[in-house]
Image 1 (cartoon, rainbow, N blue to C red):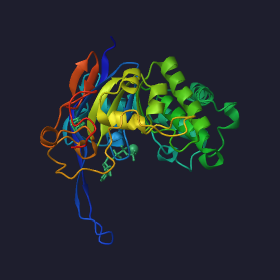
Image 2: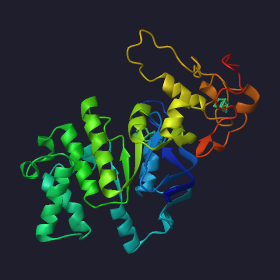
Image 3: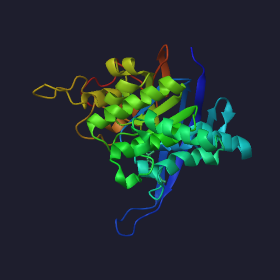
Image 4: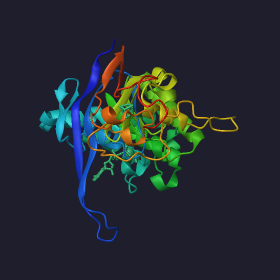
Length: 336
Ligand SMILES: Nc1ncnc2c1ncn2[C@@H]1O[C@H](COP(=O)(O)OP(=O)(O)OP(=O)(O)O)[C@@H](O)[C@H]1O
Ligand code: SF4
Ligand SMILES: [Mg+2]
């Protein structure tokens, strides 16, 4: 069994939001992550799957140290991130990289492709002269921009969206990191280009043995790429297991609702397999019970409305945060 390379221990993160005079929105607190614990094993592609606003990017930003947790700890290879300073922090910035949904978040439009990919090598003094040039060309070739000589003098605006994302991947990978957070790297691309980017990610893992946290809203993408996945809902982990187990035998009502929402090709009508999502949200006090209580058809009003289920083991490597996982218990479709 491989060792965990990354650990999140009871990590919480709350954002303060400003009110809006025009929209009538009051200032408040957004709990983006709530007591999240997970382990990513060396060499795996671990998927963090959830709908918009569930806290996926927040988790990624904490891991690459663009943000700090409000409580809990993040550890890479046993080192606690909040204690890193000076040289150890600089080394961390090399070892852990992030690929963003929008490649312009990591590419400066003023820099040529060569300048964008060489910059991290220069900052971290990894190579000089001819070796530096060779490293850049080889990485540009590896991400499928071929021949690399025809791309190095171009600028990001002269490339397609898919080619820009390849350059962003090259810029991250040229540092030979140990750990990469890939945050919805294909959500701005069409399906055929997405498949090419997925294959580059798989190739990078094979070639360099990199561990990857792959953030996505798509269970189908997670099934294709990931060894294990965690399903996240409103800052809480709902289910963790191998991608195959979670997708083929989902135990949490929310995971089941996500699977029901997947398009089923060739079927005349969409027949929900699990039917765990209420058509109308239930009234209740959201803050005290299960985070999925308002939408869960299986909810038991007294227990689920008053207690938060913990993420509990239900089998080897399998965890679920639900009082009635699988087909057991609850209202059983009546929506009590
Ligand atoms: N800097 C910020 N200030 C205030 N609120 C924030 C900030 N960043 C994120 N949030 C809020 O925190 C919650 C989680 O956001 P996050 O970006 O992590 O979600 P996500 O799962 O990545 O969503 P998406 O799929 O849309 O990218 C959301 O409600 C979001 O509005
Ligand atoms: S704990 Fe209750 S409300 Fe929450 S997902 Fe399970 S059955 Fe639904
Ligand atoms: Mg996001």
